[in-house]
Image (cartoon, rainbow over all chains, first blue to last red; front, side, top):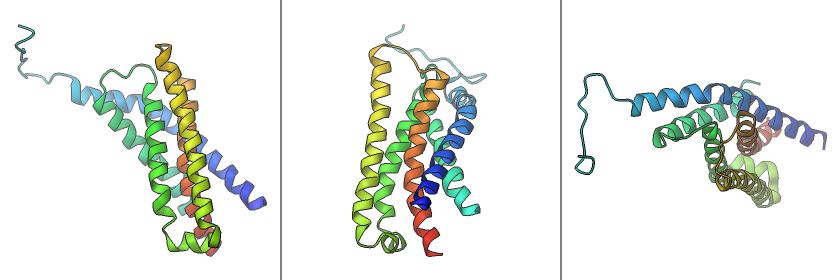
Length: 53
Length: 131
């Protein structure tokens, strides 16, 4: 029983630690990825679709 | 100790980072801290999928003996309850047309990591008892 509690406590502690670490770098990481994918590159052409013309 | 840290902290973080990248790559308009909630949901899906494979491991079967299937179903049931909590939180946010705050997103992400910790913990338990 004591081993089970130790196991649960370590799982909860590890989950809390992971949450804090990931939450700290999740937003900068996601914004960097979005910037890489969705921002127009320098010198790239802007295309217009038939619907927007 | 090193393996324990890898199973409980290293691997969940790697998976979490991968899911953050996936979420950011496919949705350019995730506002607020919604990316944390999306990541939490992906973590629970991963945990549910990995549980079956983990209990196919001979060492895990040996550790839990004849109760192996029962423990596997129990872990899946707990993971399902946690994933239901995440879906509920997400549905409530969508219904009220609002985004998650930092604290709210962290709470949901914690539940997501808990499911992965539970699944990885089964392996740690089985290999820890055997050695």
